[in-house]
Length: 196
Image: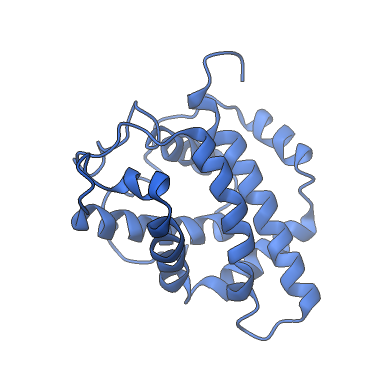
């Protein structure tokens, strides 16, 4: 499995607590998003294309987009609005690794467990605990859902950076978009109090 670094602070892939979502639920969600064998092939191709671009991609999302939207940037700052540089560095590497995990990891129990962990780290149950920082107590689900659209759109230039055909780029973007829809469906679970 490709990793950004040998050691990634707070990256607990393969050691996360069990997700309350079953593998059967995951398979049903894959059917709901229209996941196909072609999507599987193109998400891996997207990973090959993005492998050496994760840092500029994540920097683009964090500095140029999130950094310019006050209701988003506040979630990685102190309550007084000050930057938390150590947190930004550590979470940035995990964000880069998430790009690779999205593209290369098998969507199995370990992946499902880590999706639940990612979700929890955005809720009041675990936000700030991984890096021991003082920031907002949670990220509203609405902000996460809304930002998915930005991520899906702004990844296109990175997917086209290696000279693939327009059709291949569209297929990679389609697989990426379906994966993010699948992940946001999983991330929504800890935010809900009713039957998911």
